[in-house]
Length: 190
Image (tube, rainbow, N blue to C red; front, side):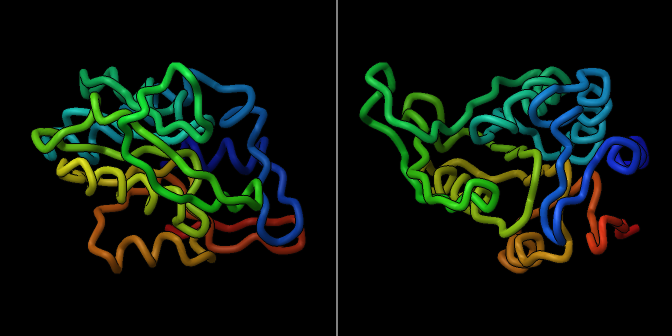
């Protein structure tokens, strides 16, 4: 998606050879107009899959997922990373290692919100090692729902996550795929 690529080039900051800071428009301060265009693009890519719900993981994927959901006219569910007294104890669980945080979380989704009649679209802001998407896919599998696809805003194509997910047969669509980040510069896969 050219609009997203241009925004990354304009406002993104490369740190080292593997961190891209896009917090000024994607995952801290959010550019809703950009998210709106991203939502339209996700709908264009996955409309034929008859999506019934969108699933993401807290926190950075929630904004993008909510904007995209308006085009599918479906609810958004987000997997929680922490236990809470007001979360149903009857939940689907999966372990997820966060590349950004450098730690493992047990994510959870109430069994009240996913079932075998659903077709799920997973949406997230970044794809690096694929662990978040795999954890969410595991939750979809536990529920008996069908996984319609995985929509990613920014994929780090030089890391193994995208390759891993595609080799497992998942329909992964990334709006921007970064092929390298070296010496403070980045390039995209066309």
